[in-house]
Image 1 (tube, rainbow, N blue to C red):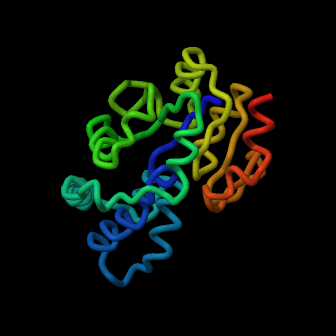
Image 2: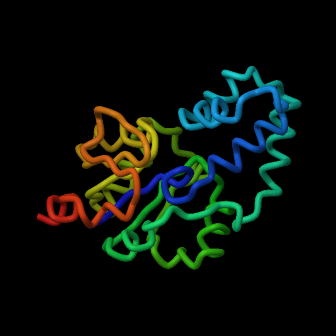
Length: 192
């Protein structure tokens, strides 16, 4: 089985760190649960929703540079799936340097044969170009993401989809915890 992964909120629980950064910039009067929800839709959605000024956005970028890999915790059970898959690839809006740094910190760079990052020049999700590029190279069986925009490109290409810690009607599968993966019919159905 070849799996395409989103990064933030799918492989690593990064939203709490980003929520804290936004809270720092916006002030304590803005509810952190609301910030988390807006970020879960998308980073750009949160920027627009809170009408973030260019100065505030620069402050967010500075604070993001101070995030260490140990602040980005992998989700429980992910490594078992990475190890199970024949090939794993990533499509993310993060920088390659950031992704590789976190993967190396956890010793997970060995699990990934390829990735498309914001640095590679592909249009942002939900445009399917990056997915198509990786699907043509690796024949992807499953795309896993935590947001609908992570699944839409896969659906367009006929790739099975799994939503993580979220709900959407377009997902073929839903997981709240990766430890459930091997108790579902996902591995059997996709290895047929």
